[in-house]
Structures are given as structure tokens and as C-alpha cells.
Length: 516
Image (cartoon, rainbow, N blue to C red; front, side, top):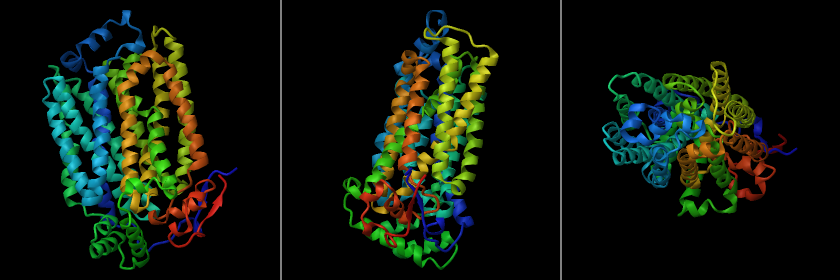
């Protein structure tokens, strides 16, 4: 059965000279710190919104509903449009910022975008830490969103361009690892600040977002521009010098010529947004749209945004819900490390398919267990053993996401677009991600109230659809140099009809189709 796999010559595409250098390792690790911004916010917002002093200060109606559990079913305890706006407003700002970031990244370089994003996040963190009303909270969140939009647009591209082809997956996943570390740190901070007597611990949680922002700002000042970005802006000599430095060898003629060829093609494109709509870019357009769409419809941000709220809903106490979030955060980090080890050894497709299958099973089990405990009316008590069973299933779900759709949702879109549409492709990926993150963040608590345990079956249905989509339409991109990626599409059973022969660098017959 045709599944769209690809085998290049020797399984590795064109073999360029050079290796992974200490310089590249350092620059990629520094750049990946941009993931801390996204991760810290994902972890911090759900914990803060479960803290009683924070709810007393800004959302007293939610606290009253939570305390009046005898008259409110468990599914609806936290249903508040204003509370979800606090969480989701960041991603609406990130959606808009990603389009601006696309132009900035292309015109001024990747490191400029990273620096600007860090500065915006820093100011937003300070405003949130000293907020005295809802307006200050929302303004701070919007600035955080601008920072996340710029970081998420520029960092994955930078990592893919700096890394050698055979290590691109692992180095790009440093971004996802930074996200998971940010989530874990945030969950731990929330648990600690919740113990502060006086009710101001939530301010510490929000203000400490300034730390990863400062790390990114300072780090970006010392980062070099990627060879691709330098060529894109006309600095050919600097680009070759940088390529020699990142590859650790003077013998970079082959890779440099491919970059120049790609850059010349890109310069003929006046409008990458119009260009990406051409039929020959159909696979990139579809995957840069559908991968982030499916990534959010896994339901993962239900766990990451609202883990403490969700755990309180199913019967955990205040501290227990926060410590359970720390446990899922630890699972997230370990599973991402496994993905870094596996992605360039076993490929993207295998991780996508295995992770999707495991997530589907876990969504069905979670929905079934919650239905068993609370039924349709949301009334019931959860024993310690049953609560721990639900936590275990959720941890297995988080692990599956963390070694598949989590990191690959950023890696694959960043590595499949040729230079002439790369800014548009990554902006689409980021904006679709932010848009559906906003929708999930804004409407999850209301959906939980109305769909009850069926919400988990809803997400499970999308996991099934996206796993089938990957099986049929996602070719393997492991070890293929970015500028040669069109050979993968040309060899694919479905996408090949869209790719003209002259779009394939090095000839149209370098690869061959294979069945999945």
C-alpha cells in the first residue's frame, strides 16, 4: 500500500562535508532557549488560575462556583469566559505577531526576531507580576504573546538551517526540549509559590517569566546569523565563512552552491505568500497548515494549560493537583529526550505513527475512566486509586505526544520549505498553531462543561484522523538536506505530480518511491 515513504541515495540524500561542531552545538542550545518562553507560559498559566488568592483577586465568581460544588457539577466548576481569556489572549497576540515576525525574520535575520521576541516577553512578564486589575493582566499577556509569536517563528527555522542534515532532527528538537523544561520549571514554581503565606505567590510565578526572556535576549546578542539568512540578505562572503565555521571544514563547495542556487530562486520571488499558493508548493502548504492544526487537536494543551484545573476537577486537592502537574512535566521532559535520541535514527514517520496510536488509546481510556466516575451529570467522588490510574493514563498520553507530535510539529514544517517560501511557510505553521491554541485555550473549559467526558473522545477522533493522514501523506525527511527536500516530494506517490523536474536540485531522479 502506498504510504509515501522516500529513500534517497544511500538513505541520506547528498552527503555534504563537515560534522557537528562545538560552535553549532552552542548556538543551537542558546537559540533553543526561545522554547523556554513558550514552555514557561504553558505551565504557569494553568497553575496560577487554580490558586485561590489569584482567583480572589481577579476571578471571585469562579472561586464561588468552585466552592459551591454541591450545586455545580464537576465538569463546570471552572467554566468562565473571562478566566479563559486570561489564558488564551496570549495566543491571539502570537497569531498576529507571527505574520509580522515572518517579514522581520526574512529582512533582518533570525537573531533579530529572537531578540525582539525576548524583549516583548520580558516587558509582559513584568506587567503581569505587578498587575492590579484584569486590564493589566490582559495587556501583559498580549505582550507575552508577541514574544512567543516571534520566538516560535524564528527559532525552529534557525535551528534547521544551522544543523547538519544528519543531526537536524535532534538539534531542532532542542527547541521542544526547552519547551518541556519550561513547562516543568513552571509547574515546580507554581507548587512552591502556592506555599507562600500571604497570597502573593501567584505574582512570583508570573514575574519569573522574565528569567527565560532575559536569557533569550542576552543569548540572541551573541548568536551568529545562519548562512541561509546571510545569503538571503546578500552577504555572500559572510555566508560562506559562516558555513565553513558551522561545518568545521573549508570543503563546503557543494553545500554552498546548493544554498546559492536556492537563494537565487528565492530572490526571483517578490511575494512568498502568493508564491506558496502555486501548485509546486502544494505539499509544503498543506503540511505547514495541517500539522499544527492536528498538533493542537490532539488535546495536549488541555493538559498543559489546565492540568491543575483538570486534576482538581477529577478530585485532587490544591497541592495534589499542582504536584500531579509536576509529574506530567517530568514525563514530558524524559519523553522529549527519548525523541531527540530516536528522530534521526528511526525517522519522523515512525514517531508520528507510534505516538498517534498511543495517544488515541490514552484519550479513549481517559474519557472512559472519567465517564465511569462522573457520568453525565458530573456528580461523583474519585478514590485515590482511581485518581492515580487517571494520572497514569494522562502521563502515558503526555509521553506519546512528547516524543512525536510535540517536537515533530515544529521540526517538520521548518525543514520542508525551500528558501523562497520558508518565511511564509513557517509563518503559516506558527499562526495556525497559535490560532488553534487560542481556540482550545478559550473554549476548553466551556467544552468540558457541555461535552463532559465526551470531550476526550472528540480529541481522540482527531488523533485517529491525523495518524491516517501521516501514514498516507507524510514522506520520510530524515537526513535529507533542506535545499534538496523537493526530491522527497517528487518521489512521493501523491505529491510527486505537483513537483516539476526543474524544482529538484541535483536532478529529478535521485530518489525512488517506496511503500510504507
